[in-house]
Image (cartoon, rainbow, N blue to C red; front, side, top):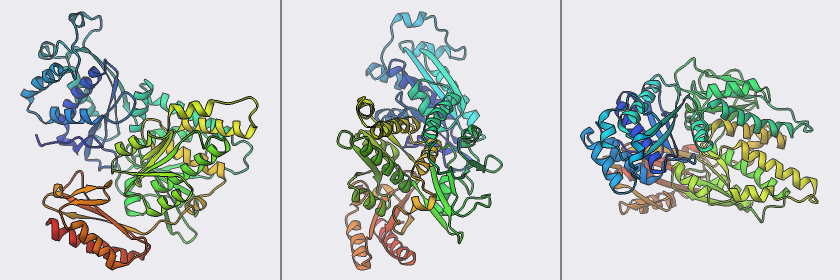
Length: 541
């Protein structure tokens, strides 16, 4: 078996190579739950925006967040060791206190073990206690098979009491939400969205701004299931396309639209100015766009979504007289467009840059009372801390009606935003309601700031690990001389607001290049090629 590494997205590869990986991850999920005294752990079968022939598996912590770093390392070890060594690794984890030992009563529990649990597992892991896994899958042809492998792996290899709750087909954010909220049904998740969104719509009864139509590209993925439910609510005007008649993510979906700045396949004849959205294959991302009167394409990516959310939340905090009691911050990566950062800081907002990867953004966002994080690719959410909710709900009968109303709106927004993970469906509904509240069309939203032109390239290299970064991926620590060469290129180009960073890919032997400047796209392309040549010269290919 090839060496696999657990990344931000879990384990991913061609679906034909994932059976044993997913089988072992069933055990990892059970062990993680056991290490937390049986708290619920999630397991999702998906490869998100990747092509349909690929698949993957990711694990979810009991609070709905991503797997902690310590257990990423354990997952790597258990997935990559020889089958004959799995028992020894489990015993080592138990002996080391990472997994608690059970007592003799565990063996005589009234909870009946699954009949498929092997006698060998019962014997070798008899000290293990209990575990609970909630499992879901996307709509890929391979996902049902792999889900069954995960269940089998947990049942056959885990020796303690085991409960598996199967959500079956669901979006990735649904699984995170269900784990956090101790639920096991996509229907319950959708009911919660309906109630939160419905409350916000009702508060718009006296707003004469009619809801605009939103055309939604479902990427031929599991987001179709969620959006068809939203369509049935009849709370807004939703029109769906790419609902399953084509290949998953093929020339459609958030990743395709954001990377290519191009309309997806099979887009209907959308009137100019109407808002269009693209989910990705598992609906944890969303990007928006519209066509102007000349049919020109305008992208509203994760940076624009974060800006819209921040503008609205900061307005409500001021109206609620809470701007001095509640900290509000925005978390971005180096890929965030410099114009978005400048816009936010010009309004006095705290903006933090962190390493690339959702887990890093989420961690930083949780340091604020209200943290808004987004990657440019459309993955993000608005996180409300318990301190924020307490402050918002701390009202007085004598406070002005405008203050009370603003507080109620903040609570409603906190209920609609997924508090576990980035959620394309919830974010779509948030965008819709905020535009209605502000009486904005897509073009007005777009005019918050003008993005600086940018270009991304990737350069094949023999060994991407030769490139090490610092300052949140914005500077190169090694090899020596590469950062100096890039600085020299930027200085000679003499372009306004120019910046560039280079970082190794997390999944393939390439180095990724990002350049940005207030310049023509042609000049920017030349600059990117100059940087690529410097990378090749220093790192080799």
